[in-house]
Image (cartoon, rainbow, N blue to C red):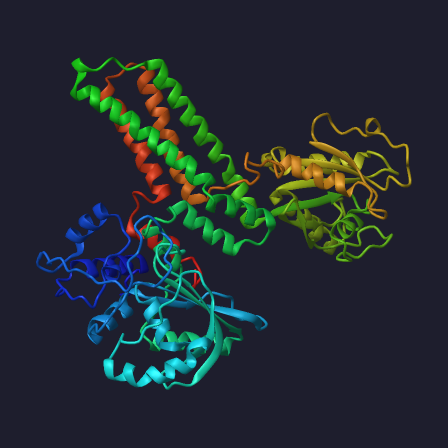
Length: 577
C-alpha cells in the first residue's frame, strides 16, 4: 500500500535525525536537521524510530565563510559537502529532495515554464545539471577535477534570491534547455527548505526534459500538494492557510481569489489562533485555582461570561462565511420565470450580452431551460431562462413548464418577470401561487419582481401591481432592448445574497466544510460552558468544555490534526503545489 505523502515526509525527516550516522565534517548539519520544532521532533522520533538510541559526538563544521549571527540574509551559499559519500548523498536526495513542474500543462504552449525543487540537496542537484553562462569556460576546465574528486567536489554555490542564466544538461552532458535559475535558500523560501526554480521554455517537451534531468540527478517526483505540505510541517503556514493556497489555485472568479488571498494572509487563521489562545488561557486560570485555591483570588464570573460571549460572537461571524464559500465554489443559480411572452428570453440575452435564447413574438417559443453564464460582483452566476408557465394541452410545452417549475424550486434566486404593458394579471397570481404551493422552501428563496418593457409604458408605477404584500424582496424596472435597469438588477441580487459584504481589510475570507464542522463543534462547547457557568457548577467542569473547544480549533489550524486528515487535504492539491 502506498505511504501517504505526509507520513512519508515525516519519516524522511525523522530518519535523518534518528539514524546513527558517523560524524563527518563533509556533511553539514543544515542537511541533516529538518526545520521542525525541537519538541515535536523529540516526540515523533520516539514514535517512529527503529534505531538504537545513540548520542553522536559533536562535530565542528568548517564553513566556507563565516556568517554574521546578526543577519538572516545569506550572501553566499556557505554549506560545503566536501567529499561526502555517494551512498549517504544519494539516500538524502532520494528521500528528501522533491521536484515537479509547477506551471500548467495540457493547454497551448506557454512562453515560460517552471520546474521547482525543494529539499536539503536542491542546490547540489541543480549544481549537477546547471551550467551558468558566466562560468561555462571555467567549469569545463574543472571537469577533470570533479571526476577525480568525486561527488560534491565542484559545487554550484548560489546567492539566495539572485537570478542566474545558463543551460541545463542531462546525464550525458547534452544541453537540454536554456534557463534562468532562481535559488531561494532556507529559511527564506516557500517551504523553509532550500528551493530552486528553473525557468525554462514553456513547451511540454522542454519542461519534461528539464524535470527528467533533475530526477536523474537524484531528486524525487513530488506528490500532490507536497510543497505546501512541507511549508505547513515546517511552520511557515498553518493548515487553514494551506487550504487557502489550494483554493487560490482553483479559483475561477475574482471573488474566489480574493477570499483565498484573505485566508493566506491570515484573516481566518488569526481568528482561530486568537480563540484557541483564549480558551487555553481560561483553562490555565481555572486549573491554577484548582491546585492553589487558597493562594489565588476568586474568579471574576462577570469577566469570564463576557469573554465567553465575545468568543461565541467571533465563532458566529466566522460561520456566516460558510454560505459564501459555497457560492464561490458552485456559483449562484438565478431562475427567470413568468408567463409566456413577457420578455424572459430577451432579459437573459441582454444580461448575458449574447443571443443564447430564441426570441419571437409567438407565445411559448422557449420550450426548454436555456442557460447563460455571467459574473456579478466577481461571483459566477448561471442564468436559467425557463419556458412560460401556464396551463397548456401541448405535450412538449407541458414538459417545458414542468422543467421550469423544477428549476425555480432549486434556484438560489427567483426572478419573476411581468410585462409593464399588461400589468399584474390573474395569470401572474396563479403562477405565483403555483410556485409557492409546490414546496414550502420557495418562501425562503429570495424573489425579485422584474417589470419588463418599461419603454412601452414610461409612467408605470409599482402601486399598479398587486404583488401580494411582501412576497418580493425587490422590485426592478427593466427594458431588455435598451439595457435599462440591468445594473439595478445586478445590485439587487448582490444585496440580497450578500455579495457586497467584506471584511475590514477589504477581502472576505471563507470557511470550508471541514472548518465549518469544527467551528460548530467549538460553538457547541462554548454554549455548554456558558450554561455551566450560569448554573454555577463546580469550576472543574468548565475545563472539559474549554478543552473541547481548544481541540476543535486545533483541528482547524493543524496544531492537533491526524495523519489521515492531512493526507486527505493535500491529496486534493495539484502536483507542483
